[in-house]
Image 1: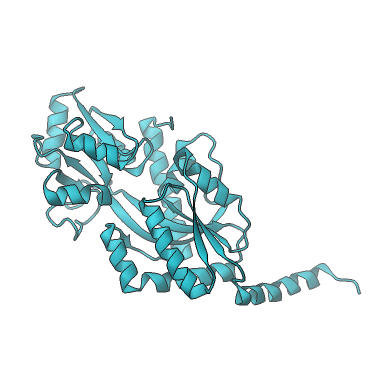
Image 2 (image 1 turned 120 degrees about the vertical axis):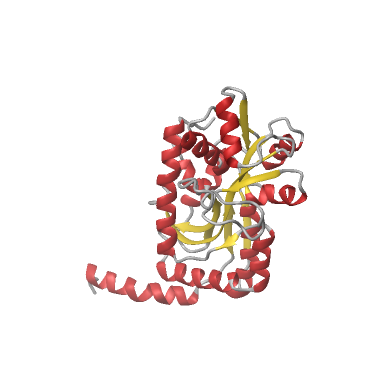
Length: 319
């Protein structure tokens, strides 16, 4: 019997939901483009445990660090679109397309967005001995002493670095960037008063600010954080356009079947509604989000444009 193209399409339309109903029939993998221990890794392992229970199949975390997250993201982009490979990544996903000349993926073509699990605003803090006790005092001090002030970040191209550049460009001040290899070395530098001004994500600075070993000047958000009630936000201080955060999101290869993505999205939403998941997110200072694939797609698109503008205006390039 001759099979017409229309018959093939009709068969595919019927077979796909059936395949989704049988899904999953083998273990799943979550690729994390960073080393174990960071926020992406913590979230991936939380989701892996929850999805293992809800899907009835083992979900393993596969850490593939390197090249500013490009190795892991590139691997996920080339993975089979069968619903058995997911990616949990940070805002590096939206920064790298502009930061690198030839990133190994196209964010909007190679992936479909599943959901943003959570976000954490960045913040600016100083050593307690620093004379600036507010953002205004910091700006005035740097303006009065051009060429004498530096700021640190956990690495070139990270969103804290880009927050620092947004700050520098917005106020047209002479503030030089000193990158570190991660939040740990950066914090030690701040605590040692080697580079007394720093930008980092809230999870990195919150313990020191709460302990009084760093002075938080502002969080880069519309509203202040419940975790740090004494630290004002840039929005409430009247500094608009400085909002910046680091998100943690779930992605899948672009060709993964929509019914399977819908199933995974539903299971992730159920996982995020559990008390232990929300408590763990709060522990690492993440604000839970859990948006729809369409909403996350728009969030990613907006982030790529926002960070791309900062990178181009700041003349930032990956080392």
